[in-house]
Length: 317
Image (cartoon, rainbow, N blue to C red; front, side, top):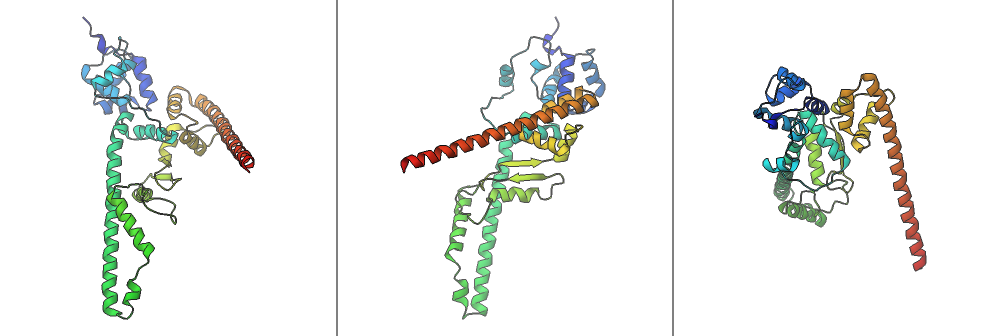
């Protein structure tokens, strides 16, 4: 009796590979087989051995039911089998693009990036707190050294020089309290003279020397990172160019979520170069029109809210 659980749909495998922007050789390297083996699978002249089945699913970030011709187990059943659980969360569009870009850049499934995210945030947060604690110690040591030098060399000025401002002492006290309570974003600190918090500064320091680092990092309220852009050259290579749309315009539209990165990669793999340029120009024009429409909606909503507030104030007066 034939084991239908390993019957592969060759076209489904090829489409999944192309959606990931991978060549046959790259897929073969990921799952530790030969390029010829992948080619034979996609031509339907060889079956997938059981030991390669899970590797294919992980490399392509798809359930076996999406690659198989056989009556497939449900995605939920497969998730339970591999100890995976669904999560209910919404993320900003640039975060979704970043997730796909990281997965493609380093050749790993998106779910592995998500699974590692809590660990990586933990490491960053603790490193940030350690750095702040170390700097507090350095400041305290510097003050102690200053006090000793002043008392020794300028005894008549010592009390004046050593009487540091109350606001400075309060700032250091608040920083010490913030670090002790693992206040990563610095909510306990009064930073009226600053535009960004300690975690944002820490991220900037870490990314200064990256060869293909952050092109943009913004924190609108001074705490967490609200918006970012990175690996722009990598993204341009994945998307390609249109005839009229500039690479920078395309990249920004993708980060904003007006263009879907996965769809661009899929179209690029399936269409001829000329047809892809034509499609990309059209998609970019539609994205620009949609962006303008949303902006107008936000503007109208803001105007309506402002007008409503003025009417209420006039009624109260």
